[in-house]
Length: 395
Image (tube, rainbow, N blue to C red; front, side):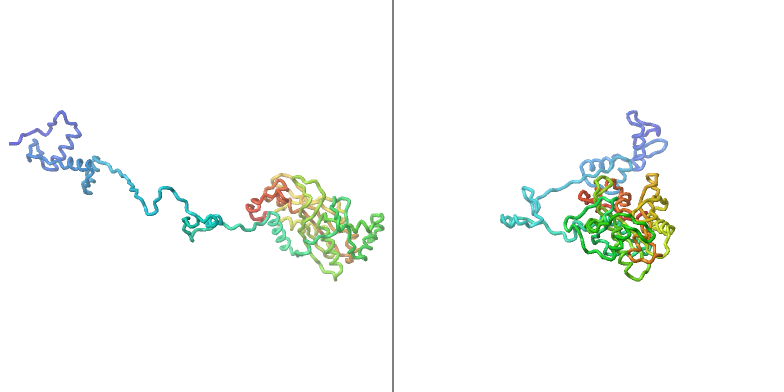
């Protein structure tokens, strides 16, 4: 007869949680009869959980259901171990050997090329980027300015880049050539008219009233401004039946100046002109507003100035939003009759012109504070590669 126990009986040595699990497993596996009194139904109990835990401890493999049952009761947790097996391969060597990537002249001379192991070529790999030419910031701004001139109807002429002679002015510091120091290739009829207007005037002018010297005019020099080019082009235009023309030039000029952060002895100048009948100062102001608005400069002011070859003359100022002040950006004026009429133009023909430097707007656009970093032998080639495209404030 199996011993009987009351349902609320619990050995004192058992933890309540352990006793609860034991009762649950005993009833589930029908080891006992769970009524008002507990009676044993089997003589021997097979503890499968214990057997499974022993198998886990011994590293034996369990079924999926057994694993899930033990994990649900938090009797086991999953852990992962990774192992590696190291064996000698076909290319095993006791010392690390560096493979060769190129067959050099030294390898051929020493004869060790026979023992070299060459690295396999990867024909899908990309090579180093090819070094290509890069536009200088000055060239980028120059191209943008040319585009503006062309949008306004101006014609770009290649003769801009040929050296020109221009009579020296007292207001310019000039580089004179040693060889050849003078020229005789001047149109004599035009030279005589220029001499006359300088000495005694004409065309409504009294002239400068001094002895004009031919030897001074014959001196060869490096041009100090691109107006020298404008003079040659206007002289050629006056020899033809008159037709309105528009010209511009972007070229290099030379002045004997001390080099500092804002001045060079060699720099670039931009010049535009319009030749037509009946032009006035109002036309000049209108053209200037159109031109500079395309550069992103809409706020302009004009100040009277003096140039030997223009009357009236105006300095051009624009409001700089960054500096919060008005800054000079160029010069302008109407060519004097004493300059145009000796060339042979009709009396009612007028020429309006303006000019500015190429370096100054480029320095502002690219944040350069020293002109020597932009033009000359100290230019950083990295700047040429990194600088962005020039848009001159346009959309």
